[in-house]
Image (cartoon, rainbow, N blue to C red; front, top):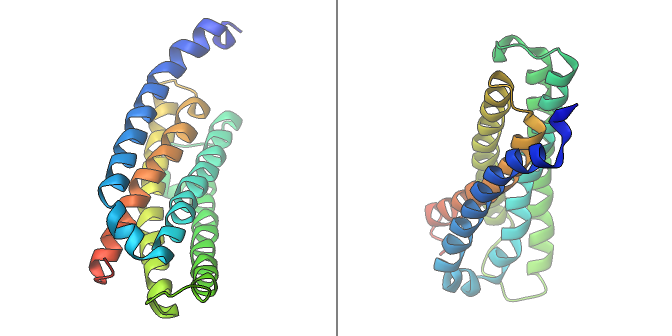
Amino acid sequence: MSYYTVRGILSRGMPILFFTSVLGIVTGQILNSELDNLISVPTILLLVPALIKIGGDTGSILGARLSSTFHMGIGTTHIHKNPVVKNSVIAAFIVGITASVALSVIAWMMSGFGDSPLGFFTLFKICTISGTLELLAVFSATIAIAFASHRFGIDPDDTVIPVIATLGDLVGITAIFSTLYLFNVI
C-alpha cells in the first residue's frame, strides 16, 4: 500500500510532468513558427485544435485499455498475438478515422460562412491523411510506452495517458503541417 503515498505519487509524477511540459513548449513553438501561414487560411486554423485532439484522445483511450489489460493480468509480451491489444487498436483507429472524416465535413460546412479557397475534397484529404499519420505514430508510441512501463514495473496509468496526450499534440501539429505542405495549401 506504500505505492499510493503522496511522496510516491510525486516522485513518479514529477519526471512525467517535466517531460510533458517540455513537449508542450516544443509543440507551441512549432505552432508559433507557422502562425502566419495558419492565419492566411482560416479554415486550417479551425482544424488544428480538433485534429491534434483526435490523436491524443484516441491514443489515451488505447492507453487506458492497455493499462486495464495489464492490471487484469491478461497482457502478454507478444503484442501481435494478444487479441485485446489488436482489437483495442482496431477500435481506436476506427474511432479516430471516423472523427477525422466527420471533422472534414464540419470544417467544409463552416468554411461556407467565410471566404475559403479550400474545397471539400481538399479538406477531406488533409483531415484523413494527417489524421492517419497521427494515429499510426501515436498508437505505436502508446503500445511501446504501455508495454515498457509494465515491463519495468511502472504503472502504465502514470505514464501512458499524460505522455500520449502531449505527444499527440506534437505529432498532430507535425502531421498537419506535413500534409499542408504536401498539398501546397500553405
